[in-house]
Length: 389
Image 1 (cartoon, rainbow, N blue to C red):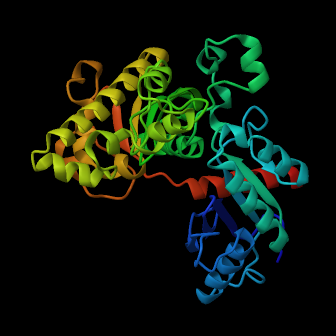
Image 2: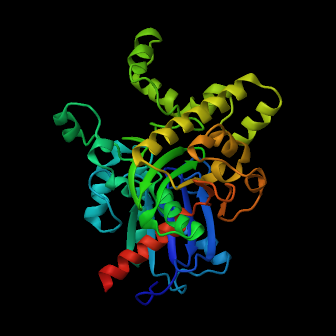
Image 3: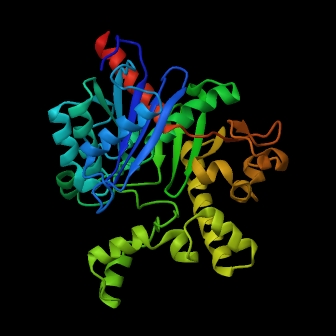
């Protein structure tokens, strides 16, 4: 399977510990030729023993859809990798050394990087084209030291690579670079806040195209309230729960990552269900919604001050793109800061990038559907164009 330099679609892979998401697309126009997911990798009775079997199943599914990977002219495979740590601030062509370094970063993302490594190794064994790793943390490598540094003993931070890394960077990069065309202004003059709101949530402050702050930290747990993650809590909570409730470190970690957030507050982590319960008068759901919005306003206000001004506030990802009530709640009462939504525009069910603020508003409020696969494909091709040129 090969393609001429500069041509051909890109196969984008997002490998987790038990799943493999794939998409074959044209990086120039964004046209998707095929996509799918292989699930329950390694689970009993699934029939998919490991990631090598998952890649084989993917190839078979693509063939059934009329795409033969051997003859489709695939130029490269772009791999989503969650954590690049301090080692990777840009996409990189994968070789054995890169795989080893990604694996060595697994302590920083134990739920994500091992699956990515397994997916990369399986794909490299079966697909003889260039492979490129694109890192979720890379967009935030530009954070100034004051934003990325925790107030811990320096030697400890250096030894264990402790800093704010941020996550969802591929989405934040794609969205912040889609905004200029929407508002008709150059990227280099825009100060933006991007809110990526899905089951996982993160905020970023972007100054003239460069990330200067973000809500997630060393891990994806810090920051906003999420579907099952708590986001920010008092750091003393860990010792308090250990001392008073007898919980182990592992139990506390599970509690904050899998049993908290909207699920912990209301019993449901799906935002659509939360809205249904809230509309039915469920007080726990109403409180969960209010806590979620309060945290969003907290970060929005902080980033407005850090940037010194705000040109565009953008909502993206599943909740951000689809929940008009949430968007309205986030800007409610912020008219004095130039933030407002037009009720009709905000309620539009459009799936396109769009402005939802009133005409002439001092700050543009927008909805931009994210496309992490397209961003990975584009970064993959840009890297290869540079190395091959």
